[in-house]
Length: 259
Image (cartoon, rainbow, N blue to C red; front, side):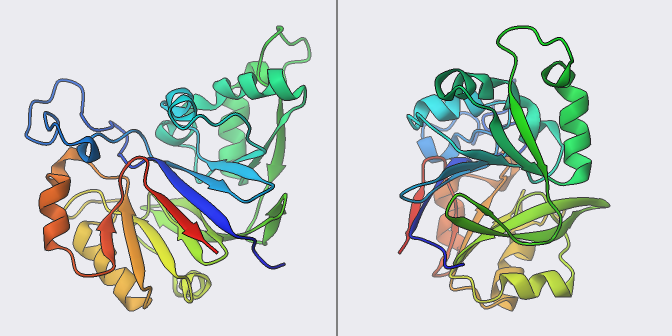
């Protein structure tokens, strides 16, 4: 299936604590540059007919309000960590207006967490106003949401499997520090690659900035944006000066178009 033209918006580009981090007075957390303010990582993917969100972290409600998103067709989850999952309860607002369940796509590990953390949505005797969810278990097989084809990509967050997703010429990967060769082949040929880059110093379960840059070059992707960024990365404006052409730190509200 051919991918339609897409607009992709970064709803959040921060790590699990967000930026600024509670209680921190470092130069990044006290910066007046809006690009140094990062909500938890998530993207909005829109075609002319379909709108989906990848991950619903703790900032999901505010992200939807900030971007004035009146309708979404589906939620795709990368993995079950709370900074990617915790805001799912706020889907109930969309349930209220559409009068139907929200389609949710997740692997079996994440589906287990959804059923556990939002147990009340699956109760036999539901309280009025609880989220209505239509869970769809995904594997590594491609699938389609509305008119948007999706290619899942398995990556590793230390020992945890995480789903990346390719939408046409755009590939989105967060919370990873290793990608096996067969999965790299799914990424090759992308015009734009998003990778997590937590900080400059190496980390046990996330790519560092240098590692993310090296991977984008290895895969010969012309445009790379980095997300899931912590305050330890440094000031956005200063880090941008250190990066080469075609390589950038993403920021909240950044929107990309793919004809």
